[in-house]
Amino acid sequence: MTSSALLTDHYELTMLSAALRDGTASRNCVFEVFARRLPTGRRYGVVAGTGRLLSHLSDFRFNPAEVDFLLDRGIVDASTAEWLAAYRFTGDIDGYAEGELFFPGSPILTVSGTFAECVVLETLILSVLNHDSAIAAGAARMVTAARGRSVIEMGSRRTHEEAAVAAARAAYLAGFAYTSNMEAGRRYNIPTTGTAAHAFTLLHDTEQAAFASQVATLGKQTTLLVDTYDIAQGIRNAIAVAGPDLRAVRIDSGDLSVLAAHSRALLDSLGATETQIIVSGDLDEYAIAALAAEPVDAYGAGTAVVVGSGAPTAGLVYKLVEVDGRPVVKRSENKGTVGGRKTAVRRHKPTGTATEEVVVSMGAPAPEPNDRALQRAFVRGGALVPDLPDLATSREHLRQCLISIPWEGLKLSAGDPAVPVQMLGGSV
Image (tube, rainbow, N blue to C red):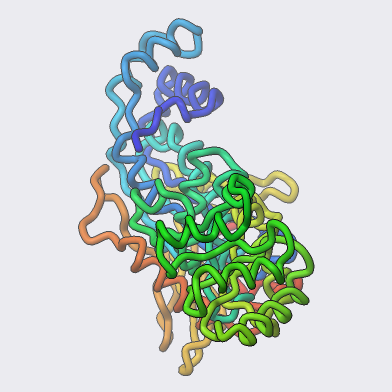
């Protein structure tokens, strides 16, 4: 998707105009993206959206109509408009791989270049990473709670139409098995799935007629929604129409714990021992965890996914940390920064369990056995580096990262970050 460069905020253009006028726009700068803290109750964050961000960056241009708008509104002067019309990012970007875990202070993205070319990217970078990282972190907790059972993303109707596509991608990165969003399936090659809604059952004169139509069109590998009227009778009707080799039934309301157990017993009594039970209906990680002992085969999650399960932003910020090779710091109360470009590694036991993250300003951590460098190159001289990981690779990377953290870090209860961060060098 092509981005409008007017995703830029007004205040970024204010700084740009002033810096161009006073001569500081060309100073070599380093900006970093990090979180001061994790959302309440969370023990880790997930880096997500990097692939989307890099795609947007390639198209980030101020077209003539956008420049004219800024001039007509008096937002920029003629010289700034001329600079914007010729804008191309020519700097470097490094960062944590998509699918990597992060913690408070982790330097997850580093943007280097002139002040002018870096400052106009702030809103684009933060809007993509804050949204996708929030979705991925919530979704990863749902995948953990599901204990190996499939989770289906089905939240498109609960958010903005483009946010729905991004959310589906982030949820798949986090380990969801499918999405119901067709554009996400097309754009990112994510497996799609879905079934009829209650409206389809209500359209027909009888529930049996609705089921018969769906099976006749899609075959027995479809999923029948059985809770429009009476669930027990709905299951009987489903098996009567499709036979005992129906792939699955879905329950979308009621006490899912009780209904799943009763439905499993009823399906088995009807000879449909292989017919799966899919449950949905405002599920989040806590609701999924509460169903862990029940005979549920898959979960459908919607609203909770697209709002980050209560944490709709990752709380990431974009801060200037270096000017012409000199570290700079912000000293505001509760919002201080550590100056200088950072290098980060994650340390592990010989067994592979992560023990700490070490971040060094204006240098690199002294190497130790079982260290893993966390940053990699994404952009050099304004061009994407070759062989960037695809979504499938990033998905597997996150799966491995979640295996590596101490088991306490996967708890749904509030607690300390799963991996402590040690910041060395620099000043706050």
